[in-house]
Length: 281
Image 1 (cartoon, rainbow, N blue to C red):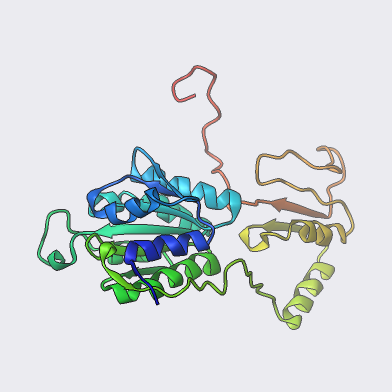
Image 2 (image 1 turned 90 degrees about the vertical axis):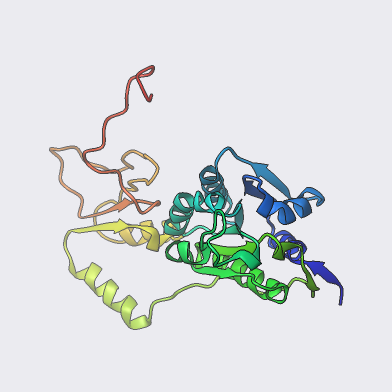
């Protein structure tokens, strides 16, 4: 079995997962990883002006593609700047992996310059947050991080001390058995029958559909259309009223769907758009 550095194992695994870019700001504690990326074809390091922007950029890529996206931050403030973007990614349930570099391993716990504990900091905004403390952990940790981000839908964080990234260990072939496999959570037959009975027995129904109805847009409208009256797709992206909406003097529909694909709604007191040229416009 060949030996590779921890940084090479990480980049090999990211490429096997289909990652083509890593967003972040370079720093000495990240050099082991960025040097490997620089020498590779098919993956690139996208330099951003601030790590927070890198985390949001990774989240945007994951939103648009549904695939794993990656951001990185150097030790200390480099990776703490990721936190706003990672919270957003985790709450939006998009698969993002963050590489958080750490100070030299022998200095951890000594109050070293820019010492933080990212394995504690990112616990609340991730499904997985672990440290590669010795080279022998690298394969298992990075593969588990990829599986958690994709399988659970959210953030995974891998903490790597700068010196550990250069150390070598046995490197088996990358194994990601759950890659591009999606599981479905299906309610029991009794729950389905109970929901159907509730819809059939009610006279006026409004369905507020959030993220729990992801990927079921057509089915949702089919359920609404099975009731008397006409369903309306409210649109989660600013869409206007759909066909069949009555005016104020018309008879109200008996079943309507107010759909919000992003599962979030602007507050009622939100300020109206400003005129072109106005401050902030």
